[in-house]
Image 1 (tube, one colour):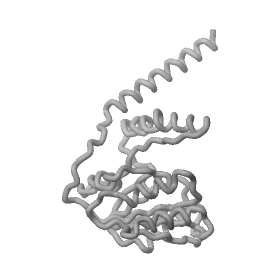
Image 2 (cartoon, rainbow, N blue to C red):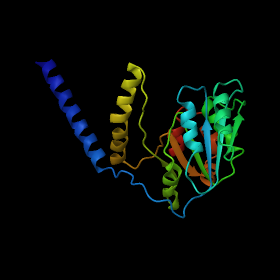
Image 3 (cartoon, rainbow, N blue to C red):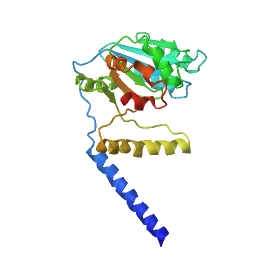
Image 4 (tube, rainbow, N blue to C red):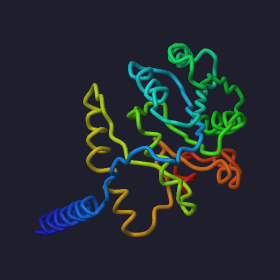
Length: 234
């Protein structure tokens, strides 16, 4: 009898959480694509890389082929010249000779978070006011930059990021991960937003202003944290 009561209570709790997730998702205003406008600030994109796979070149090309009317600086950072990502980056850059893109070897070990260590070294050569950090395996449509910088028109917007979905699962573990992210993760974020204003970021794409990044000490302020995306948003 006790076991049945416990199981019934857990089932009820699960149902309540599922309905809450559904409500949070239903209330979320999905982004509506807008036409490219006058707001198109110059952007510096920081891409920390480590290793490569079959999709790396495709993902990197999607950033090189943005339909964006302002200058875009793309900095690909790797910790070692021997990293297999280097050859992929060189091929992608060679195929887009007009792009302001470069491969940067970030050999200094500046702290326990190697990704942030790379970002610190890339920040030294950033040229533009809008700074974007994106993971290596992110593929975006050709109008992504035009869409994602738009909220920065508002002076009280400090950071922009977005939800994402996982694709290309090739085994059972990856399929389960895709299921969890695509069906559950983002609705949990919206649940958190219903409880209090979001004070964290999701690291697939993060966009902020250079002046704001410098005001918190740059990426150097994040190098001792594992979840650097959370800390940057915070």
